[in-house]
Amino acid sequence: MTLTICIIICVLTMIGYIIGKWPMGLVAMVSMLAFVLTGCLDPATAAGYFGNPNGIMMMAMFVVAAGFNRTQFVKTVAASVNRIAKGSLVRVMFGYVLITMILSQFIQSSVIVYGIMAPMLIATCEEMGIKPSKVLFPIAMACISTVSALPLGGGATVFAEMNGYLQANDYTTFTVALTDPMKARLPAMIVMFIYCVFFSTKFAPSEPPLASNALQARGDNREPLSPFKERAGYIIFILTTLALLFQPQLGIETWVICVTGAVAMVVFGVLTEKEAVQAINLPMAFLFVGSLAMGGALTQTGAGEVVGAVLADFANTLSNPYLIGFVFFIVPFLLTQVMMNRTVIIIFIPIAILACKAMGANPVGIVLLVQSACLSSFMTPMATPAIPMCMANAGYDLKSIIKQSIIPAILLCVVSVGWIMTVFPMYE
Image: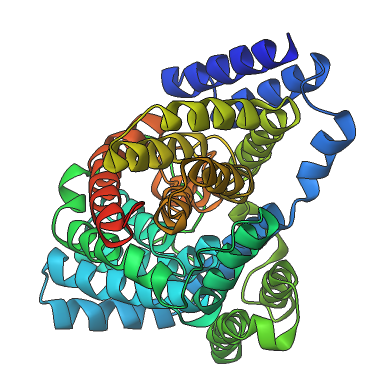
């Protein structure tokens, strides 16, 4: 009964987001209360979501990005980019998407990568006279769908994690090699690069559907910063970025790094306290908390396990490996739009391994498909914290996000399933 109630609340929440009659932050909070009052979600767990490290990191990055955007540095970068691009939006996207994808190999958080790139891209938009809504979502898609695709930085540990799942489920006949995750995801990475550079802006709104207030516009008549504060602004941003790049070596939590950068922006006068508070988009914070609550409710009620069990049974009835691969891609892909991708990975990779074990099949391709699907969550604000941040910056509503997501989602599905099931066949 609780599972049924949970699904009903999830459906009503999605309808509320799509209709757009009420603020999404309000819908998210009402949804969370409904989960708690109906017993789908433990009250203590729900309260804990307000202190989620990813949420804190997202809010802090709003402030860090706002401080960086306050300096003349971003304006100088934007002018330089525009001179090199000679007014070509394709050339601008080529440079920004390429840098985004490179950063995504060393920083495992799409929120951080997006937070680094957004201020400069917004300044470039102002320099070119176009709205940020035209370009920000492609950058968000690029950092989400390509994070840790290459065996660099955190990506070098993916194979070990996959082998850990195989060992935990006692199916060590097969192993995942260091380069297998790269081999599996590289074609999709190339396709996403081409799409984001050459085609994505054609489907992006020229005017933001909603008001954008996350990053202050440069033409707001504020006095330029003093030389000291100017230098402090970009030094803090650069040091924050470097700390995030070397976070594993430093041993400091990412949210601590981001909060330190945010506080420093105020301490050194780059932002006033009022400007820092205004940079934090509370509606998007509430939306993020609500998305965690939805994922938590689905997890606590066992919805993920139920879907996974049905999926495994259905896969056993199929004889075509490509159809099996499609099922193991599309179901986690859809679930990760309303649940945190790490949760979906934890649920579905063991199910995929056990299903392959029952069929006597090689699980490597299926496991990598599940991982690829879970790292392609960009269709809703519940998918990953980078999307609410992007929505706040660009003024997107849910309809505009979904509209921009459909084609790349189809491309990722077709390329991933076709390539991975060919290169990593289930049966020799």
